[in-house]
Image 1: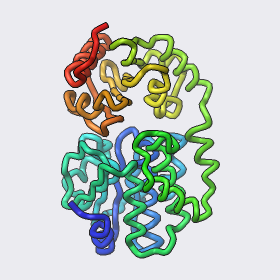
Image 2: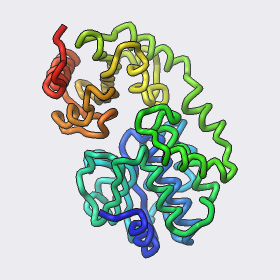
Image 3: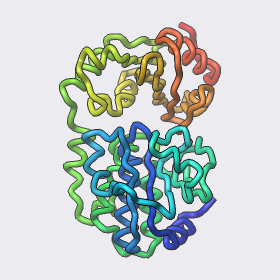
Length: 322
């Protein structure tokens, strides 16, 4: 496992770099990729691009599009960011699964792929690791074009610095990025203070159909395709719906079930200290962090609910069937 300094030195030797992001891209994977790409260009004069991600949303696209690889680009080196498992590679990235020269990640469930790895589970976001790598390259200040996407990465993976993964180091990195003069107000408005009407309709329907178990401590919130179609919601409207459940009073284990394709469900767990989300999701081939993890399961909604409740009960000693 490489240290941050070793990862920085390895990147010095790279050129013609292609950076990979994960399926259903969030602010951390896109912000980390864009920040790293901008840093490699500005600080080291490298040729670097992002592999286009077909699932970009309105919130993440502005940070990725300026760095998309042109048609015909042939990379010499491949770097992945915020990807814990090769199963999370988009379809167009799977050809590079065996060619990843450096994997940068912060998930405890990281599966160990890549010729070299720089993995720090204690980091609140992958963007925090990329920030440290760019600093290690010897720059006195992170360039603004790298600072803004890195702020996106760190702020989104910490819920605007409200989640329990936020540390003093997280705040220090954010402060240093803000010190470059970037306008964080626009970022905070888009990601944390704006909801579309369709998003609010989704949340209302989720709450209306919410099921409470385990003495009210576990909540199951479902988003079937039929709901998305009825509301006319897009992937942008449904972005980070998993943040909704944990806001319900008395809930310390919120499970958001979103149907991706007929009878294929993406499960996102957001939990308190009582429930280890990674251990639960590992039962179904997924992973993540102790307080935030996910997996994909096939079956009907009733079958999925039964399986996830059984899985939680298997991991949590004081789970109650009432």
